[in-house]
Image 1 (cartoon, rainbow, N blue to C red):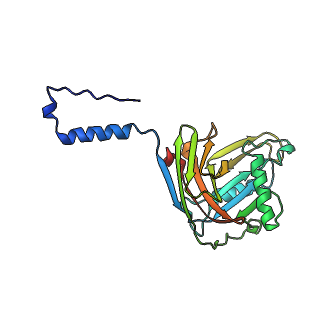
Image 2: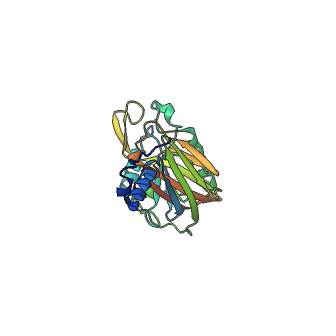
Image 3: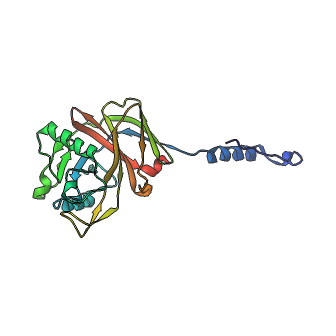
Length: 245
């Protein structure tokens, strides 16, 4: 859209050069409709939880994840993602956050470590972690932080993500503060609360577009980026999705 500036020539001499420059700069800034957010390094481990609203043993794992989330992930407090799988939907309750792609990812991650496919299932940097079941603390993951150069722009409900070297990089949109009133299945008559729920994810290409869910709360959403090498996560990073708008 072209904007026109009308100047009164009779009063032009009274306007200082600095004022005109400031006005033009403000106009330029106000015309911007989107902003880039950039992630330049991976600095934290990645913990994946595979869960389902149709699984009676999953709510404690969901609650554990919410309790252990960190706003400033580090080597001892990883970024956490909850992938809801769809293979328990047949028990009478369809998990609205579940997808076949999530189930496929779990099978792929499990095959790398000869782990079983079950819920709740945890993987730390691509390796199965069963410490949850014996109330053990998360081990400090050992890895050499890799370098990323990922940029993202949010335009309306589409997130455009690009990278100079996209090989083996994955992106996800996660959302906090979600809840479901379960009406059937193993968790019927319960209100289940969730955080770090994966709403969309994809391997990154030179330029990837993710269409956001219509019910996604941008204020509770994060962009998560991680890199994998031979099935092992070499580090992850995250930022508020609103910073890309």
